[in-house]
Image 1 (cartoon, rainbow, N blue to C red):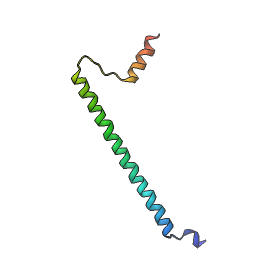
Image 2: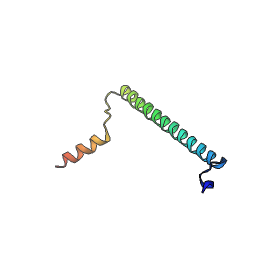
Image 3: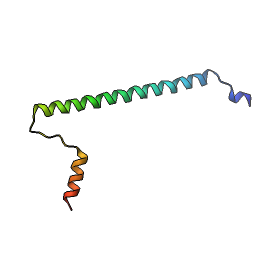
Image 4: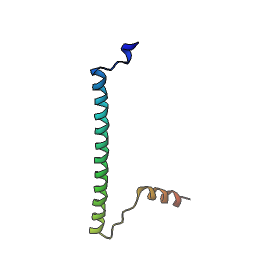
Length: 70
């Protein structure tokens, strides 16, 4: 039974791969958040350039469409 709980190089390398996967996932999520924020700024700048266009939320459009059907 003592052989099962001993740690060796394979266990260390598996833990290192797991740690690096968590780091990679965190960086990817931060990068995705940055892209979403920049896209929001792009939408705002497009609205400033053409003030007659309105940006509407899809969720509010769906809710208003359902309420107008009653």
